[in-house]
Image 1: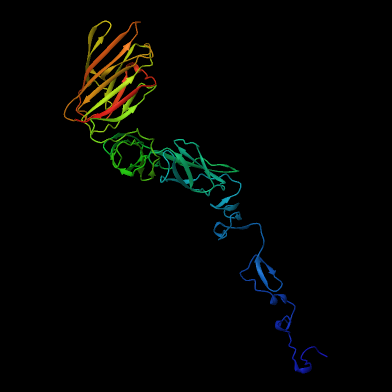
Image 2: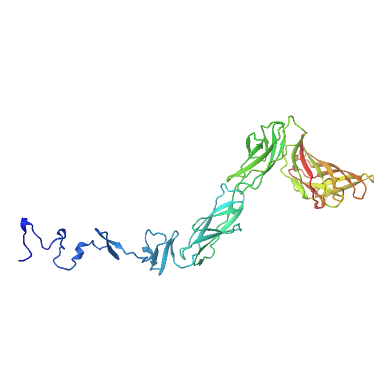
Length: 465
């Protein structure tokens, strides 16, 4: 009996050819019979079939790399992917910085740019962010090295990507930067230098001195370096603590103190980047009631040095007084003490002084016009007994006036045994500084560059009235 056009019990028709829906192939011939059971391959060139046991799909072959032209690189690559570039005829690898040829030294970075990051940076510890563009014409870099100029410590800074942070920069200093790229296959040449950028930080800590008055103290602040950004404010704190007071001036009256209590003061300086470290404590002052005639501005002990300069002298007094108690470390019997005003080393001073030798009883006069110093008095040298020290007092009149020359009067004395016998010397001098500028600094020094011994004291006072 033929196998077509037959019926079975219950009237079920068996179609020919048997359709896929009934388990057949739907084909009348053996040609392409399998294709009717598979998904279409159109648009899936270079793919293979895969099945999960139920569904069948076309998938890309599990190759170690893909290939094609530059424009056909994968749209969403993963770091580490390989690609054979048929336009360039070499293998490339994808990195965080893009596609790069394999087994080639890196190219020179380009577009080096530095950005100052001064906010909150401590004085002389500036920070810069150095950005650059890796060069895709060479191999992939494993790291980049930034070199500042002028040199820093450390001298180079390394990172894996742009930008790289550079620290330890000197305040108020301009730096340029170069970058090299490096990998196991070599190191590029230096990039072109960036434009110069100045590193800024918070200011250097200031220094200060204090003069006690009635329930107040006059604070004189000597600014440190600005850190590359202008100082806008000083903050002063007393010890024991009363209040925290601020000023934009370098001379300030600190109020609210208790008479009879000893105080010291510290100060900080603030600029656009932040606030400096605290200064060292000032000299100790004790406010007193009334208005005393003498106000101590500063006292120093210049051991081992040949000179000392009082800077930023307040202009709030009528006259100044300098008190010296000291001795020279050198072997001469005596050394002369002199001074210069406002750094003036020219021939604008006149002075004369008589000296009386107690043993000889013979006074003599010394005169000098057109000198580069104003004479004060003399102190004994190391050839005299250790116990013989000299002292002197110098008055500078109308120091803050700008309509007259400045007159100076000094008196001093000491004992000497330089020739084996006792000698007493009394020295008085008169000087004039032929300049009408107000005196804001005084340099105290000794002749011949002598050095003060330990225990020497030099005090500067302001005089009212």
